[in-house]
Image (tube, rainbow, N blue to C red):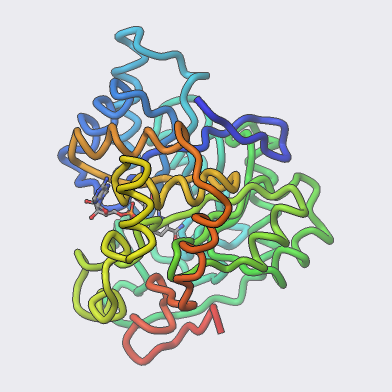
Length: 324
Ligand code: NAD
């Protein structure tokens, strides 16, 4: 399996399995079957509300001798309501216990924005909102405060590596001025409609491994409620984009595999999600063929700077323009 070496010194698989929207009821079986299919990296988050079940699936595979703990790479993320010094470490500990695997391989700050604390006992899944389900309340917590708690998670053996998600260059430069442990990974929305070439160049120059999410662009957002899917409904599917289709038939690979290879060939990890056995297998096979430079460029030329996961667009009254 192809891997990428993180700044922490640990290896991360280049292809993994994304757990967003994998239902709680099926998550344990989905993960267990993904391990059987050959997946070793699982990308979770408190936000996905299936950490406990995903951990159960992994533990079942370990118990049956399919894999050892050290063969598996678990990424998870700290949600926005738990950024403060008071809440971050207890939350990361609780998440680690939910997975039940001893440690987390890579702990990420999910978004560069702190929201007021919501007691998980009162509202188990806050999303972007307070207990009332409609107010978004930013909290006065700096990125530095949260980063230092991620570092404490490394020092206490909760996480092997740490990183960030949905950050842009300015904050990465800032974190680097005080980081005691390296920013091992940056997870970002990355597909041919949102290439972010400069950000990728900056991160790779600084040995920050990129993980791409939503590699199939609009596809994932079409499944969401209206405000979240609007931008996705207004553009064509990447699977139908001319260069993708042409390259797919030339290499005898599916458009999905071409989109994944476009990333992995540039040393960018991918974490596609599928609940379908056939797609699960084809997505894993995203490093076994090579595209020509001209082919990579023709896919990158589809760039529209179009971001689907943008709270500045989908939250009512647009209170958080974090990508402005
Ligand atoms: P994705 O790009 O993996 O797309 C998923 C969609 O594509 C689903 O509708 C699935 O049925 C379909 N699909 C999967 N394989 C296919 C194939 N071979 N052919 C055709 N269709 C296929 O989207 P995603 O779930 O948004 O992103 C992947 C993962 O990234 C998530 O599960 C999550 O772990 C992570 N993620 C992270 C963030 C973040 O803020 N850090 C945000 C979104 C997603």
